[in-house]
Structure formats: C-alpha cells, structure tokens
Length: 200
Image 1 (cartoon, helix red, strand yellow):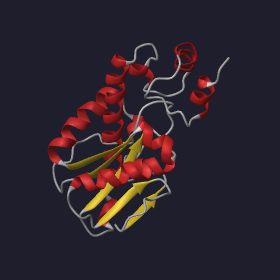
Image 2 (cartoon, one colour):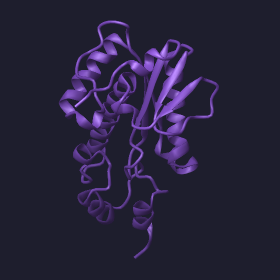
Image 3 (cartoon, one colour):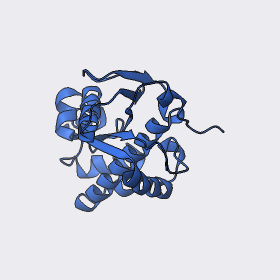
Image 4 (cartoon, one colour):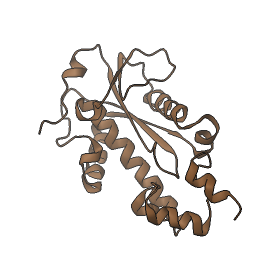
C-alpha cells in the first residue's frame, strides 16, 4: 500500500506547512492541531496517517520529527469547544499551530475540506493524511500530543479509562460518565455529557 509522498508539497511555493488535528470526536479533553514543515533532507522513515500507526511508532516518529522538522502545536480547550463549538475550536487550534511555527508559510496544506479564517494561502485535501507527507507528519504530532495530554488527565481523573480510550465515547467511558458524572474536562456541549448532567 502506498505511503504519503511529497508530490503535493512540491507543487507549491515554500515553506509548505502540513496541518492536521486530533480529538474532534471525543467526549472529553481538548482538540489539538499540529503544523509541520519537513526538512529537505533527513525526513524520518515510516511517516504515515497516524491512525495506521501504533502508539509506540507514533511516539518514536514524534521524537524524530521534533528534532529535524519545524513543528507547531495548537490547542483549543474544552471551554473553547463548548463556547464556539467543535468545528470552530478545531479551526482555532489549527490557527494556533501555524502561528506557533513563527514564520509565514508559502502554502498550508490542510487535511479535510475546511480551512480557518486566515490570510495564509492554503489548500484543503480530503484524506490528506494518507496522501501528503507533511500532513501525515502533522497527524502523528497532533495525535501523540493529545494522547499524552489524556494520559496525564487520566491520573488526575481516574475511573474513566482515558489512558486507553483517550476520551472517546467507548462503553466503559460512557458507563463511568453516568456513574461518576462529568469532570471539568468533559465537553458539556456534547450530547452524552449533557445527558449525564440531567437530574434523575
């Protein structure tokens, strides 16, 4: 099966930034975006859509990417998700990730079909994390970063299984939500959390 390539990057003026997010669907925790500018040489091997990689592979690639690439990470909090909704919170996280790079991009390649309200030249690419190497790299960084946040949150809020489910609405998480009630990291604008807040 073909891996992501740099063909799309080479079609645009540099520096070319790949952007992807992690955490739109969970019931708890922030949404995280990453922006990555890959070096011309020395790109780590094995970069792929983060969903196709193990946690160990993502961790190893994350360490390598932060050494050789220019990486920016943006986070939108649970409070922001509840205030402006998950779509716009995702756009905010992407904006923060690109701003964190500290340079003006020549082109931004974004996974998906939506882009933030900004002035940067950009192209949206559906399935971009499987096609474009810099977007795939961003998907790895975003996923690893968010997973680590949720593992840390699991220690502060035990019982919900976040170290394994990362805040997604699996049966064990939903059962704990109904039994223990929401934490400050639960997204109250999401229906399962809102229902858990209702009085019996």
